Length: 125
Image (cartoon, rainbow, N blue to C red; front, side, top):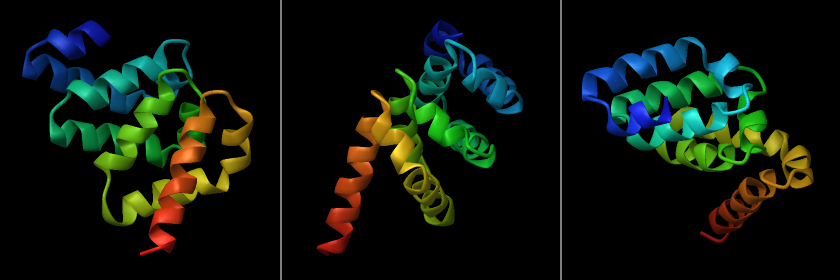
């Protein structure tokens, strides 16, 4: 799947993203799912990246789960950069509410550190 996201035609990537969005919870909770989400957020069109990001955000608790995965931490960082406005705020708040779980996770610590630095940067502006 990741190979197809990287090297497939734009139409193939778009159809694959539609499948990912429709099955985002199952995919994220599978052993290689965080890599699939990360690949979609890296190689899909801008509009499709937003669809994937929103799908992850809308599934309760999924953003926190994804942030704790080996490839998921990178996917979550991309989600934070893809979303804007109210959705970006919602993603940041969702992660902030799960900060204890992120700090306790080897891979989640990267996201927790990013959130803390972003909050510090915002506070000093």
